[in-house]
Length: 110
Length: 115
Image (tube, rainbow over all chains, first blue to last red; front, side, top):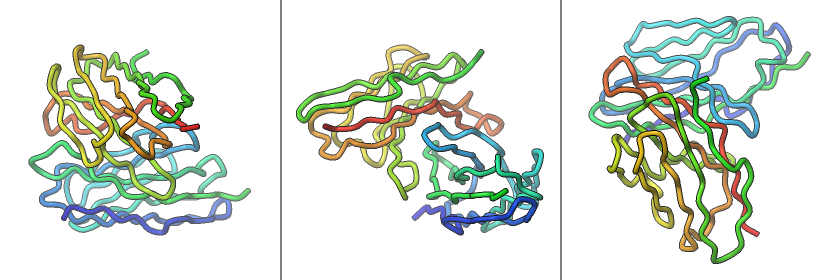
């Protein structure tokens, strides 16, 4: 069964304390792995798409990486405005039904 | 400005009522989706549509109905058959069918509360 698991469920960091969020996936062929940021009461905001193992993408303090079994969202020197829930989703081959993880709630303290 | 709009932002439903949530996009995207989000759970797929006049059930379609008469619009009706409709509802769209356009883009959401 296709599945996406995110860890940890919640993470508290001090401002400037770098860390990584994990997204483990089990799907029948990966067409794409997606990261989103979601603020409370709002829709998810698209961050990155990764297509193949070894691929990396960066945006400001965020860097997403992909292996054959998992993806990491690295946050370097986070700021309080990076506080949000980060969602990971996988798109299996042969379908356009996305599989979402339950998210990681990140809180960055000043 | 291209994007996805959902209305209303907040919706209250009485027991036994049907309500319709609006989703409109001006991104010229072919595919549209409806998800339900509950606290502590991932996004769950209700219905999706790859092209106009065609749609498929997702994982939790019972008690919901949709239509896709126009490319820009994909309204969701929550019927009285849906026993626990209180949730945050998200609409999304995706670009042309190809390996280069697989990202979904989301609307701002509608929060539905049953009174």
